[in-house]
Every structure is written in structure tokens, then in C-alpha cells.
Length: 418
Length: 167
Image (cartoon, rainbow over all chains, first blue to last red; front, side, top):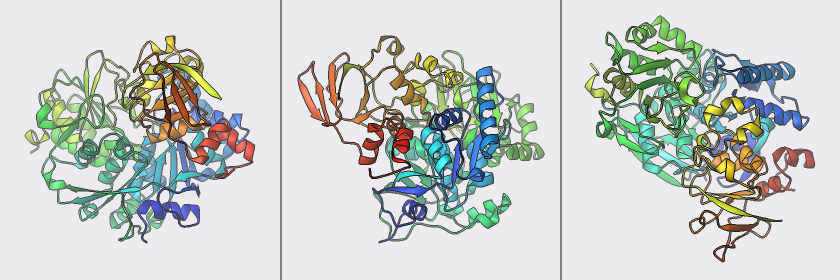
């Protein structure tokens, strides 16, 4: 019987064929932590007397959540991580390099790998055909020290994509609509496997956006096949030799098949305080917004900034609204600089901050006031997410965010697109 | 071992942001201080009212969101003997067991705030003393039960000299 992509990937890492529902030990190719979860992982390893990295080149400690640090406690955490990296010889990604998941995609993740990360959006690298999943500090600490961990092989949901986007609709709308359809726990413990005739037309930036949010439906991974677009992306990053073709077997067994016609979708928004609280943009249009955040591991890539810049070019952000733009990595920042996007944002009245998680985690850079509302291109709108439980967060595409910044109210991007 | 305590009731979709809010990010390396804010955005009174042995009782999808292991860690530090829920988000579930906090899937619909509960994990039984109700809870997979019984994942690894699925 054929295997799903999830079964294929875990079978390779386990060294023998495994099927959905089985629990297996498996090799881990890469481990990541960030500055919010890394210090605990380090302390767990110290307590266990296991200060070691089985695969130092495959271990990366990212400093991205509080970057640059707003407090001495967090600066001390950064120091702890730098010291640990030096001690075990693993990689460290400094403040200002960017968000861990973007950098994992640019620099490391490859089709066929198993990647675990102490950050729930580690599933982003599933866009490259890697079995990438979020775990806690202890699980990732074990992965770092031993180069392996245990896995329950997930059942898979096939998401069959067909059709072409209509104007003003983007990958973010697809994944939000899907989460709205199946619910915030609709795919708990499952693999979301994207397939169908539209997949080959989705660019890597779009795939990364969709894989990133698999966890918002509870999924363990969000997987794309590794195809010519994967090859193009890896080659562009100077890693063409990491490419290999991968796809689910045609006779694989799926627990559920979901069909999405991209052409039938409209711009959508996740309303407070859960990601599955989805409305059409036109149904909540007019809601006042005091802050717009364009960035994050979900939508801080060059194509996202390009869409926003096209909308904001030569225009001014609404006087009652603050626009914060955070490129997801140094590479994205430099390209946006070269292509004039950053100038457009600043001339429109926006702010461009250093690559990193930005306001998304509620640690710094854009904490909301009581009763304020923010429109974000990021992935979570939980109460308190932007540092204030008395505030409100809406999620949508970079186009909807840029349109909203112009008007100061939630705005359908089709009204402002040229 | 029978765990005894009172029920603190929560709803569906209690996120890790509600359990360990991001505005206390700087306290993540000071877990006793962070624990003073446990579940603050779901119930601001919880941290000051919880007593050792009490239960966190919730609906569906408890612990959704971020991978922060600080969430189950500070629930445990607050003295909670187990989290009972209709279902758990995947990462939280694994994290809870890894830090030695029982995460128990059961029918929580009839449990009311303040009910006296008794949980016998070994027998797989939950008794609501206040209401005179008893139920079987969903058993953990053997590997997770072994990790929990050893006190957490690292203790499990130390005890067995490595990561073992069957012990």
C-alpha cells in the first residue's frame, strides 16, 4: 500500500517502514530553538548532565523573539545561548538576522529531512518537503543531545488545491479559510498534505505561508511535495544540490480529503480572539484599526512586502493608524531595500524595524493600548498576543493589511489595488 | 497514587498565551516568578487561589498555540495535580508529560468549579466526589505513561540509559 508524504519521511528517518498511528524512534536532521525556548532547553540539558550536540551543524539557536532585546533579563538569556553555542559548537543566529523559520527555509531545510524546533511554527519548513514540527524545550533538547526523538506517525489530511486566485486573494486567504472550515483543532495530531493541480503554481513564498499556519488547525506538519518550484527556490538560495523530488504515493491512504478551489475564495480575516474565527473581509470592513503589522514568519517575505508596497506606493497611511513593517530576514530586508519597497513604506508614514519576530510575540515593538485593534499579517490573534489582553487582533493577507493601513479601517484590498 | 483537589473550570481553546502571557517573556528564566502569573489571561484570580493538589479542568483544545514548555511547567509549579480536558493541543500534551504534569483526556462537561475530584491515574479513574460521579479516563499511550511515571522525559532517559519506547 502506498505511503503519504508524512509516512515516507518518517520511514526514512526511522530506518524502516512506518504507518500512520505507529510510534517510532527516528533520526532528527535539524533542531532549532529561539530565545524564548532555548534557555529552558539549555537548562534542561545542564540539569540532565547532557550538555552536548549530536549534530552541531544541524543545530541552530536563533535570537529573534526579543531582538534587539528590550530588557536585561532577555539580554542575559541571549548571553546564555551564545555561551551554549560556543560550548557545544552549534550554530547561533544573531539578533538582526531574522525569524528562525524564514532563516531555516533560506539556509538549511531540505526535502526529506526531519526537523524539530522549540517553536510551534517550525512546521513552516514543510513547504520544502521536510517533516518539520514544533515541540517543547525538553523534546528539542533531547533532539540536540541525542540526534533523535520519538514520533507518533500522523494520519494525513489531503488538501486538494485547484483553480487560480482571483484578484486580491492570496495564499494567506487560502490557509485562513481552511482553518475556518476545519477549526482550530480540526487537524490536531494530523499532517496536512497539500496537493492537487494548483500546487505546482504556488511559489515557495506562498507555500511557506500555508505550511506555517498548519499548526493553527492543530496539525503536526503542513507538507508540500518537493517539485520544480522547490528546486528553483533552493537554487536561488545557493543550495540547489539539496534538492530531491518527493511526493506522496498516488495510492496513499488519507483520513480526510479537503478540496479547495482557489478561484472561489475571497479575501478573509481572522477576527479576535481565535484563528478559526474567520469572516469575509467585506463583512467586517470598516472596523477601526489603530496599528497594522506587516511581517512575521507567515508573511514577512519579499513577495509579501512587494504586494504591500504596490498598494502603498505614493500614498499615505491613515493618520489614526501606525504601520509597522518587519522584513522576515536580513536577505528580505536587503532585497526590499534594493527594490525601493522600504522607501515606499517610510514615505507612506510607516516604520521599518529590524528583521525578527517584531510585535508578533507581544514582547516589544508595537504593544497595543487598552481597547486598541491591530491588523496583522502574522499567524495568531489570541487574547494578549500583542502584549495586552485588553486589545484586539485581526489577521489577514499583506494586501488586506496595506489597504487597511491606508484607510484606518479594515478594507477589502480589491478596493485599492490598481 | 490518588490525586485529590478542587476543580478550577476553564472553557475551550485556552491558549499558551493565556497560560504564560507574552508580556512576561522576560520571566521565562525565572519560573517561580512566572508561575505567579499562571493562567492569568484566562482567570486572573487563579494563581492566588490555587492550592496544591487542585485540578485545572477545561474543554476542548487546551494549550493551543506556542510551543512554550513554560506553560505546563508553571501549571505544575503552581501545585496543580493534573489538567483534565476534553482534548489537548498536540505540543502542550507532549510538553505536559515531558515535565511530569498529567494531562488527562476525559469528559469534563459535568464538572463544576469547586467540585472535589480524585484522580487515580494507574487505575484510569476519575471520581467527582461532590457529584458522586465516576468515569474512566482515556489512557495515555504506553510511551507517554512510562515518561510520566519516570517523572518526565529527561528522567526517563537517565533511568533507562537512553530513549526507549518499550521499557
